[in-house]
Length: 282
Image 1: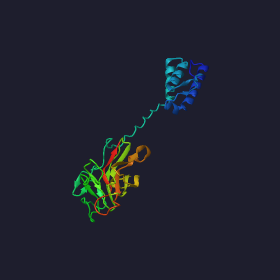
Image 2: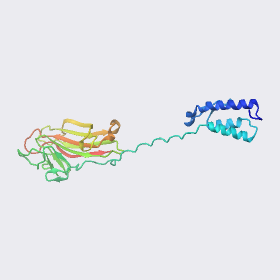
Image 3: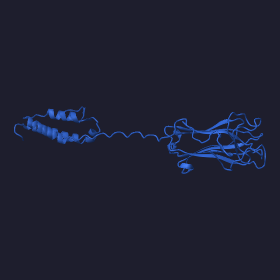
Image 4: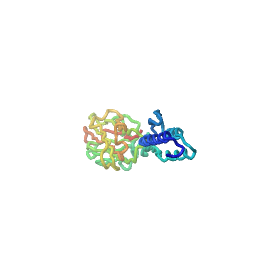
């Protein structure tokens, strides 16, 4: 026993050190900044590391200032080193994508024509110039205006694709690097049944791929199925929504296709006519 310290004081110090050892077993809570109940000299209120040390040091009895400093150093040696609380992980930035409201298809209005083909679009049977009639005219045509206003529905558009009597698919595939903050993809087809009294069918399909150029897994496939074209030009919309599409941000290419034919006539292009096809992100 150190000279000048009573047996009671010494026992008091030993008890305090045992109590502090009990405190160190709660180091995980202390590191997380959790206030925990510690019983030192009857102290049961919620406290933290700094106040425990303060009470332990101030509550002890010392013969000299040197004795107090020795005890302070011993207590500090027992104290756990506070661990820094890790910073929360930042929210991932969305993959850069097109601005909301952007239209992504090439030549959506069918106004750009090279020869007899619509730029940006592919026809499974090829293209032909428009003909009023003729047995050899069996492929789609692209026009900058409706050729016969008393046969075709009235439209102020300056671009059309019209199907003939051989089944054909008009399509376009685009690549995207990401969708950014956009939440929907709307693909809009404006189409009408312009044949001489026949109820021509069409199928409108949008396929979303995980790879570029229409490769990789098919993430989503939207389609109207085979349906009758409306008698006047009407918007038909297929929508993909982020909230119901867990792979929305994994889309890397989109294929838009329209399949149709003139089922009532065998010469000339009198099948369904498309005024425009647009793919818009929002």
